[in-house]
Length: 397
Image (cartoon, rainbow, N blue to C red):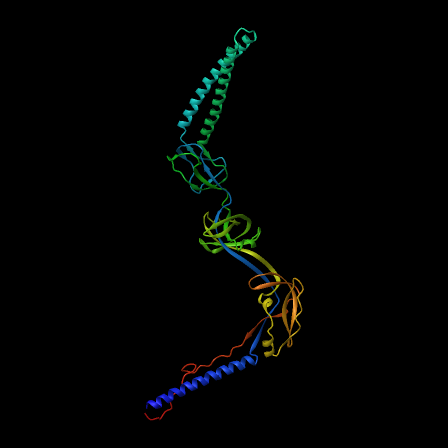
């Protein structure tokens, strides 16, 4: 019984090996007999587009931060978020009690200084007249001259201080420097503002929200393809179904390094007539670095095709003599009966999938792009590719 079972297993193994040998021999015969197919493409008119992607931030074209140069308490606020303001419009007022008191003190000081200057000037004029007549000593005349110049200097200094105090009083009234919209208000009524080494920001005003821009961060590997005037499309997460259009207006030279990644800022115009774009939105940008319409083109892989002599022999095809291409020209191949003939062309712009044909081909001409091996389909038995035969019926146990 065991001997018979061992015999059946050995027979199954032999049959499987024989099937593999037959399949491999058939495959080799099929390849050797020329089971190949030529892939071709026609030179056609098409639109060629190449783009790079980046991310950026939507922001107003002109933004002004309105601050104050004096310290004090915000006594009145006249605008709020999203308010439309005009140039010179009153935005806020600061408490002016201390500033007005300082102005009154300076006015009193300057009045006293003026009286002192008038006295010293008269004394100087008398001393000069007496000195010319040699009625007073040289020392008395020098003392009168010194006192006069000191009084004049003190008066001039107080006048300068008066200008500063009056200007500070004017600074307590905060007005808008431009026409625009209030996009940020950083203070509340009653809040104390301290103007020290830096001017505190009270309001941020955007000039015109119908004209926005996108500051996109473009990788250093792509920045060489970006130029002013290129068309741009972008989307924002707030309106995923809307595609916004713009153009490159500036490529900034300053590089930004973040985690060893170098990027450059590219400014993109973003018309916003519907006011959908809000400051601070993240934009997913596509910059069209190449955009050609109705140009004669071929698939790019036609330039990479090189005939293989062994494969062509199996297909019963021949190749004409391959010339040395002239400088600036490329070779493509065209089937003429049983002969593959080279064609010299001048290639223009290219994308990942296509290349522009400037010279050497006419519209509609068919060019070889590749040769593919036609693989035969493998037939499997119900039990698998190499299933052992079913045992014969009527046998003894």
